[in-house]
Image 1: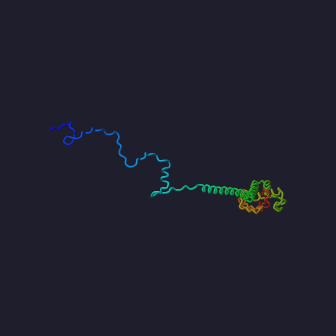
Image 2: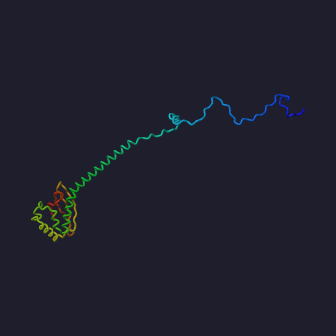
Image 3: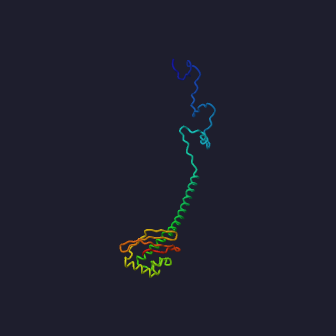
Length: 213
């Protein structure tokens, strides 16, 4: 029995004629199961924040440190700065007052004593005499209390003991408006001590007594 390729396929070569082969569709649409899905869209603003705002932190999560307010820090610094400013002002006032007190009680009599002996060292007895209060000094120290008498006494010491070559202060004692200045005087290589008595008269200090020249 020969095979007829044109014979329709079926049992015994008989049957329904074959349907023509259709071409597959150009796009495959899989079947959907369940309700249709809505198309994806971008999440609304704030979605992530709302989703995780109340979510508890996971294991090992550390809470970020809270930022402390700087208000109290600035207040504290301002208070400290004010205290320092007031303290510096108080120090300045105290320094000025202290300098004035020091000038009145120490520098004044010391300056007069140094100027007095500088004039004697220069044998300028007329200038040295200007540092003496002749109204308070005793007549026994200056005989008649005149400038000529004082110059004669100084010149006598220059001839007998030698002129003053150096001098220095060894002590200052101030009591209100009076003072005692101790001087170390050197003549012809020999030093001796002189006690000068001074009194404040206005802004100046004057010599009111001495035990040597």
